[in-house]
Length: 90
Image 1 (tube, rainbow, N blue to C red):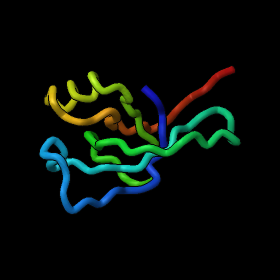
Image 2 (image 1 turned 90 degrees about the vertical axis):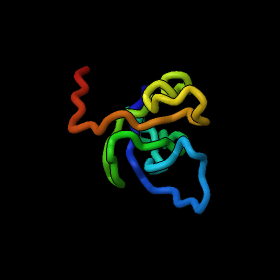
Image 3 (image 1 turned 180 degrees about the vertical axis):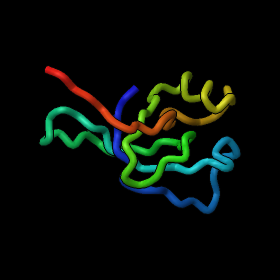
């Protein structure tokens, strides 16, 4: 699982049936190093997240398919929650 910020949406005219009624969102991983932007990637939304939300992303295919309850879904990353706050104590 990783923490990420939703930075955009993906619009498709045709998509896989497993994506029906789900949005594809572009997320940017968050790290403790402000210089490390990481690589943005696409995640299937299962939590009604929107642009600007901080989210919890499950980035493992088997677990993502379990969340979707579809063992054949072509998915690796799925947003499983919206994060209200994060506390980091050193």
